[in-house]
Length: 132
Image 1 (cartoon, rainbow, N blue to C red):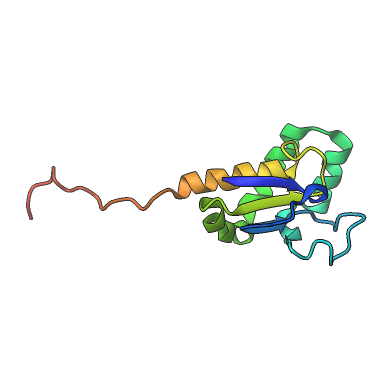
Image 2: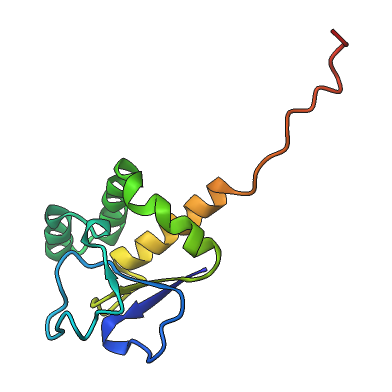
């Protein structure tokens, strides 16, 4: 399970892995105040996509475009799957509406990647084939 959190509401104790996934540093916070977070600006949408979303407010189009950006850069998010699988991953942002933002889309993307990854499969069954 992947948790979401606003940087304005960080709890005292931060168990697990906490990532700040904003492209820009949150206003009003010093680096020392948020030093417990690992800042990964590359996981946020590109500047062009972010600006387009703020102008159009078309969440469906934004979601699709951001998922395309994520698909093109698996090296940015693939390493997060182990933490997510253990339920130790929290994505943080300064946005007000986390589910209807890049944070919610990223969490859904990672959940889907975990499902696709799934448990290791067994070997192929050859029981119906004639012996060699």
